Image (cartoon, rainbow over all chains, first blue to last red; front, top):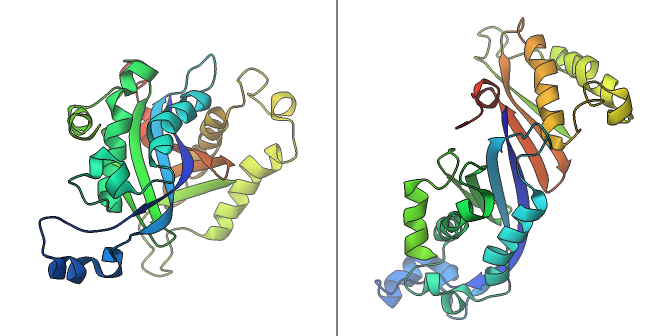
Length: 159
Length: 103
């Protein structure tokens, strides 16, 4: 029997929404106050959903400690208290919107997922990134054990 | 905290998917009364034999509810069990029907 388990993590980071492909005027028009020159911060909430077999011996899908360590070392430690535009290589050319952040985080997490949780182990099924209480983005990944081609592609690009 | 989601078409007359009173009664009888303020390991079956992880408790709640919601016009869509505010388990029909997901 399978089930999904979702763990919620928190981190704070800052960004400025500005695209190098657009004029200053166009950036201001599209991003509004999010384009203010010195950036601003958010308290992000990241949900990571793992789907897999509930192991008969343990009753667990995944070790929460192992999942926490994995997310902590790959995402939280890198994103936490950073100005994403300058501190994270992933956003050197990419606007750090919550959409793009969710996609980047999915890429980072799926990159070495199989190595960490096993080829036949539980799958990374969903990322939900909440920017404020009023807006967030959800990314559903292929609910299949191991890394799907789509997510490994992302990993290549961003991780 | 347990969240139970039912799926169905709203009744044309009442505008309701399901009578919430009936849902409440079933939840109370099948889940809350037998499990509330109990030591799951010692007092609630099958947790004398099965480890009462959030995963297993969610699956057991699904089993207890799935058959009870048969006579109602709506069917069980999801059981979500919160172990803490930051950790929850979802069980859906796909999970119960899955042939052990790739095994």
